[in-house]
Length: 363
Image 1 (cartoon, rainbow, N blue to C red):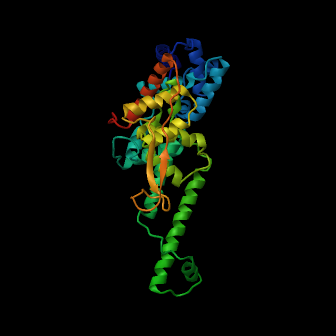
Image 2 (cartoon, rainbow, N blue to C red):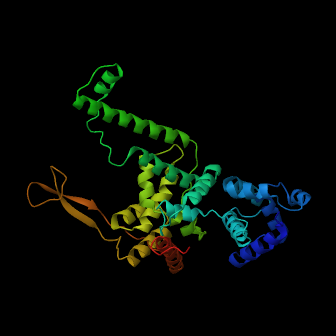
Image 3 (cartoon, rainbow, N blue to C red):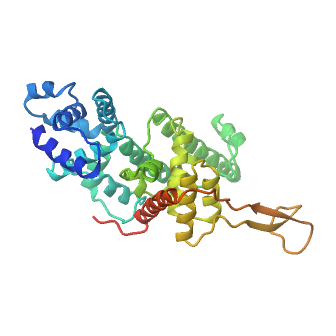
């Protein structure tokens, strides 16, 4: 059993240290009760303490717990922006009191080689971790399960399978009972392997047709100074490759935008930063991207042009017709000094996101 009052006190102290506006103790108790599945704090009091079942349900299904929390925030006329901070404080307190499951999502990400710091899991740890992911509907767990199962899908078909000689004709002839030559058998076998791969991928995508995968809260961190989520510590370049190879219906434009934004900050380049800058209509954020770029020895106000062969599109080698390719630099708008200060804070948050995957992760 878990006493809610002691958790409420610790959560409230954390919120007061971070916010100019924070809930009262009574409101904090209401928020905690909602998070753990009670309609009111009075309903919680009827139970005296949170049962292990309710505690584990809230931990494993954080998406639903967060929805209840936001609903209660609005009922209490508190800003919805507090939701992520309240959730962070709750989870941190559960970890302090050793109530959070011992399964570490970051450790699983490291095992899957999508986070800094490689780790190995023994047979029992792998089973426990996989079972934990399989039972959870939390978006971060769903994302890690998606990566884990995509790795299994890849291993089941092999990295080096060659389908270039696949022949549907000879495969169908064999299915009809025809005797094939050695060469025709190879073509039929290649097509059979190709069919197995396509079926495996289709089964995989069907399993995730309605699944909600976590995405980094990149823009919330930059614009509102939110706490980073697990996704911010993951290798976005690999994940974007995976999302494009195995896309699901729930991968919306907003989903891709957050991942592309983070990918640009993790591995900044002139072209990707200019593209990001061209997509924002916020002058302060535009200046922040400029300052972040400068800190990484990139000038997004400079043009980037080169010559290409007009006929082939290849880099011009002084032969054949030439034309100019590339893109113009960004023109920075005039903003006030106070806004430049805000832009500097934004750029520092951008740098912190890059540092998450550049520095060794503490275990």
